[in-house]
Length: 389
Image (tube, rainbow, N blue to C red; front, top):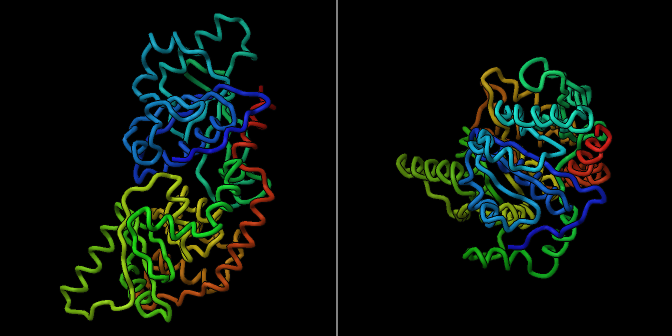
């Protein structure tokens, strides 16, 4: 598998990045891209994670140490006193999405710091990498300091680092060679070759990718795609999306509803992060979910529909609307998102708005061009750390 081009940083740093896999692999997806990008730029990274299983298919070779600059370590080992005593202290700590570093790990560094007698110099720059949002509080909160009030690191400082969609945030993850790889894929028969490598027979249909949870409007989407004027091949991601489609089709058959005639469905195996990017680049419309896939779909520059992670207090609806504002979404795209996400409990999911690839494409391409003018997250993060050291 092709790995990112190594771009050596003028000031290489040592990083400890911490990640807990909560659900759906979004946390580890973002944290791995961060670590891999830092490593490709010449930094030394230790990634501490409580479930390494997803990396076997997400980033083959990660556990064997074949990715430049990145070492993957089991979370439990961050409490091993003998191991901690042997490690070179890091310049930076990153808590992915607010996961809390083990007290033993903090205490070991605090003991080292006191022993050196150089408190300001030996204290790591401690970053709380937050979730992605376009809400207004992100610009206000990005970069703010939070003093540590208790524990072995009492008196130290954490800093909030917020990804975002404006120049007043930390930007988005984007590898230094992403545009080169994307352009190379677009040349010649890139998507035809990619489909063939994955055993997918393509007859020239429009390509739609589906990476979702279990949207109530899924059956309505399948019906709309089947009725589209142009034949469609739906490429369904492994996991919850595949199960949701299989359930919808089985329910349709059980109800003796007329079978789909024009829509073809292909189920994908678990994809590496590189191949997930290729999937998004290949398709004419991408349905994505969560944070990592949203960012990758934005860089693909194709029309997209985002299923945001639902929250009981409906906070996700405000987050969704803020994103719609950030990309200048046309009315048809806003309406589609509201129904797709069940943003209004009374919404009629059988009345899924029509897909408008033309206006959606214009909006997303303009958004991509604007975002490319903002420094990527790793560039900004390194600059932030160097200022705090």
